[in-house]
Image (cartoon, rainbow, N blue to C red; front, side, top):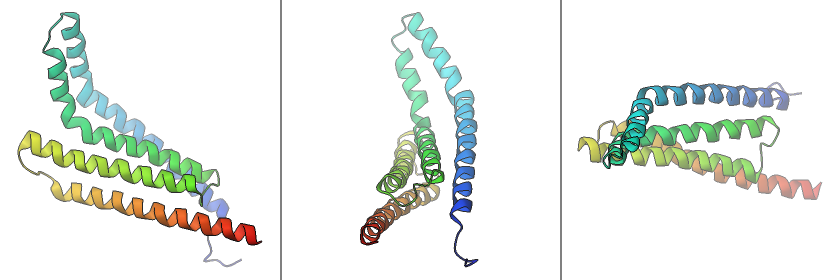
Length: 163
């Protein structure tokens, strides 16, 4: 066997390893986001609703708005985790894999757009716009890669019919 050609078993092990890594990163990021950004506002919201304070929900909304890009990136991490798990199970060239790659890219693009909008609304400036533009570029690249994977899956299906 050619030493340059990838070994499918090693690829599946790599995909499983990446899935576990993204699961760990998701857990750390979710815990950090909850501990640093959501715990106290949720506590204040609960107390405000208990005391029938009409401004409690608006206060919670104002606290939650800056966290929207981080929440969308958490969704991208979760989607990526599932994608790598699917690929570890051997489903590399399929329409489902292409859909998973496209959805991961869409979550990243949504996080970048939300970051730009939230930064403009809250700070009145585009703070960190280069990083957000980079995130959007990664998301667009993933969407393009999804098209390539879908095309490769169609070619593979045609080859399977021929053979």
